[in-house]
Image 1 (cartoon, rainbow, N blue to C red):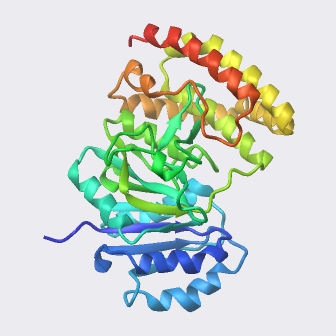
Image 2 (image 1 turned 120 degrees about the vertical axis):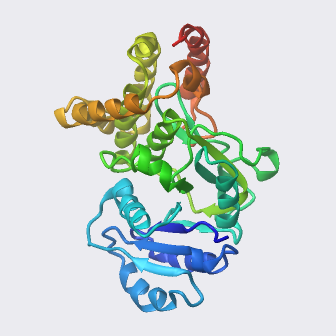
Image 3 (image 1 turned 90 degrees about the vertical axis):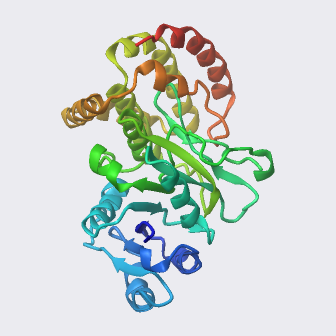
Length: 359
């Protein structure tokens, strides 16, 4: 019996410095090489990575490396659009799974093999995430699953923790899988759709994970699959703008109107806190732009489209998926006295609100 076919999608936009080590991590994979393909997508890169791929990597295709393919039209399609090029290729070529490999992420030799084992153990699993550690500090954890905050934020669970202090079970359910190192079941993506291209960057993985959950699939963590990520939070004001805009779109797309009404007082409190944080953090302009973006007809159209899709896929009540939301932001670089106070107040408010959501 042949093993499932897996396509690794490597979005390498200006990631030339990482490519040699990442490529060798594919070479070292224990998974059957003739059931693997790696799709290298420069996504409009300007650092010359295309030349390296052509000269040093493609010639090794089906030799000491799996099948290597470069997909490049010279355009930056964003995270969602770039990965979707690879997903479409994988479906057209009869693959069973895709693995999203961040540009700055390398794999442990058994990473793909262990992910496939978890996926094959239960056809109801839509996505499985590797146990992601820091590239330069492998004893430290980067993410063991995505957490969704009650205000719509998505963030990395266990970020910055020592690996010896993190006790997670193989195959345990998570809210959503981080797009840095996630395997998706292609039959599930055919049903629910691909990454949302209305999002240019950030929260695409959160939205797709929630969409899979609405359709009845599970998102899980594979503790036996390890990956190493050269992650840094960064202080790009544009990042805050995208995250602020998209968190609202996700929450408003998936929650029932009755639930949103109950959330209004808490969301207003969070909004005040975000304005305070933006002022203190120097990204007040980004916060303003995010709110303006929310009011644009194009954004409202995207929200309406996503809401219709989410509700058409719904197999779960709000009371079931919302109990997995977190009222706290933890283990993140944005923590401050504002978040500490906010966590306490929001947790108190959430204890009152959650039992009222009975639908």
